[in-house]
Length: 482
Image (cartoon, rainbow, N blue to C red; front, side):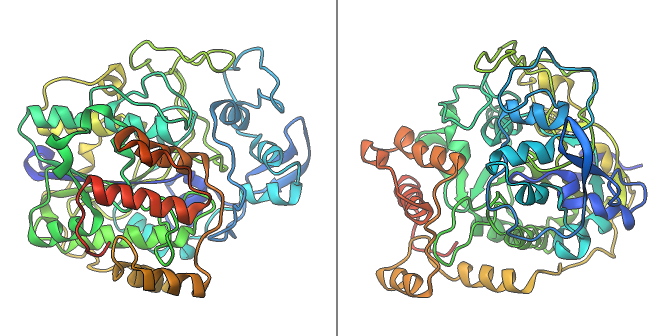
């Protein structure tokens, strides 16, 4: 068998937003029988304490189903999985087992007890609805035991992929993270890295990555495709999606209530850039989601508990959270010509597996925390002695989403006055209120940039324009497409 360290010279990680494994890939079990997926017999009661009325898992999810964002704050995740938080009441303690039976009931609280809307939390995608993602699942490897690093929200879970800790934080409030990162380990080893983004990089919340010394490591996404085409990808690439609807540039992060099909097109774009690069045979592409977003998954998080990364305890919840529980399962796909077709990896992974694998493959100096020290690494997915020659050069796309993405790619980072007027006339200006995560990204500009950046935008489009103006100034972005 080939030595992965001799093959993998470049690792690319695309991390999307707030979707569970079953929601995105569970029904692939019909095509990949060894997958720990679902077949439609799984269910949740409308009320976790009364299982008489059952809501079945189904394969009829729509791209814009979840208008009301499901809760993924730690107490609600513990309710969804362990059925221990009842409308805000405190649990006596976590049981040793749990049936993942409170997703519908918890979502009903979020929807003002509207049970028909709450049923949507059980809707999953049929394989044909996500053509890029499911093609990769059939062609390469699915990891069906990858869990978010804690039962909680986007910010802390994304921190684990960068730093193997969330520095004691469990929510989507903005914190100025003063922690060591995998990027510093790469720097120390003389390894190259870049963070590619679409509107604003969330990784700027990592205090030690800010300043002139690292500004050139943050680049627009279209530069990723250029680097891939030109054979100049860094050793490690981390890709952030578009977090805001900005006129004709629709968010492709897949965060509810954004269009999931746009994220599927992004997956295709990233894959094709890597697949058609001269570096294809040296690259391992990892496609991940940060956390489950409050959406149904049948797999109970693993026991025993995992080590605390740094001994910190969060006391904002009762009982206090010790960072020794993994969160809910998320989708994960591994792509390389050295991966056999339709593989299923049942190894338990979490987001700290990314820095752990980088350390191993690139011979980095030290672990970041106790969490990446304990995390499984995924380099053994590279198992073939010779690269495959039958991998697809192109992936299928949802047609309407592909058209929208193609139009967006032709527009500049900031719209001209004429383009803004065209967007208003076309009715594509998002008046949606900001999600908590979007608000925190907007607030990030005030920490990193001038005091004027603290202005609070009134809606999603205004916030999108706000963060783009910040990024344009901070990174000196020329008038180019993205």
